View (tube, rainbow, N blue to C red):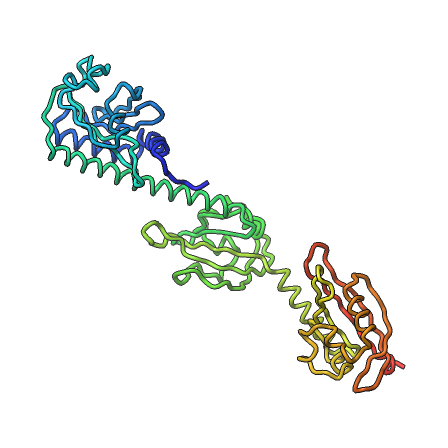
Length: 403
């Protein structure tokens, strides 16, 4: 859920929670004490009006007081979002019946609204005194300046809280990301280690946090320093806790503070060991197939539209059987490749057999250089359940050559 304050109630609730202590409360307290001394009044108060009650941070002793909204003057300021000055509360019918006025604890009041950036007020900065006072326009302008200082503190601390909230959300997201993530500080020591990193590298978080990155990954050759900005993904070899090797695809980016200064490096890595091994196996297999005397083709087809079959691979023997060049076969539709080489009915039947999803052995006569020759085609489908694409391997043998 986004961390935003869009209403006066949200602002009031957030400030009430944070004004009761900590750096924010101390900062606001300095403003209220300075304002009280500047105006020579008994107290300067930040009042937060929330759900029918007023919560106050009073300069005298820094004490917090919660009272009903109807017992103070501040709701008049918030409701009208305008300044209110009462030189003598006993002479003002709006406030003379308030408990504080009747008790003689409030004879002077001056308050200015604390307003949202989008408009509307959520509280007040006000001056209180037990003696009536004269309060002119210049005094009111000065009080508004103090209110601006309070709002600057509110905005600064809210921005910090929003940043911390976002950081917590990102950290939670990265903690359960499906890829390994670790963060190092400027000294190269690990300050964040997610669950996927634990599974990939075999180190528990308490084993690596606070330790140097090379030791954590079991590699003495990897350097922590990186150029500014995000790096391009690169393939490297690392070691797990059990010293076994793994190949990872990794990318890194600097972590910056609110002022844009680098405070660490975030590293994201994915285990590609199996992919690399399979690529090596495929290259070896490709080399064997390329030298085979029988023709070999690999066809791809879309499972929803099985009539669309494309030749993905053809070895040299198949090209020789077809009397064609690679560009005339690879990347083209199978029915286009076979057109003119097979009778129309047999061509459609072979395309259908490729997409049937079951192994099949077919014999047919194919025209090569204008001469019909007998061939045997062995089809082996490779279709993974749920995939949108299917593959079929065809081995084409010339029966005339075999005979």
